[in-house]
Length: 163
Image (cartoon, rainbow, N blue to C red; front, side, top):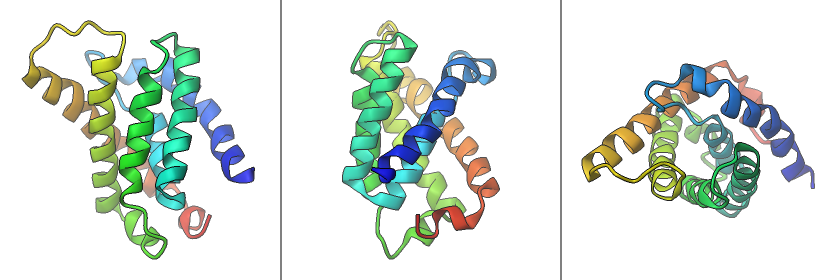
């Protein structure tokens, strides 16, 4: 039970930061996804099924507390946890948390999560495919990856050696 309790306890302040603080650092409704960074972190420590379940839980709470469409964040975060889980290898945990690898994994997961959330989310879907892919998927993924680099640099290494 401790395996799921600690991430959820860390998730609570991050959820409120995502809902209330991230809009202040967003540009044209494009901002980082702090919840996804936490999800990728724990997925790389514990595996694909764990990440998918945790993504579902995080998405459910986000949908309930943000007032969004129930299921949009659940599906997109579950998918992001599943995708990040492809990079899980118990023998390469240290390698996955190197700056370049972690940046790439977060970028890929965040881009796909943003794409799915935009398609399923509460926003109007009246823009073209290029805008959807670049402005609503790649740019938020890149922004989230930059914030993830800051987090991984500031995080002590002992936190992800063998959690």
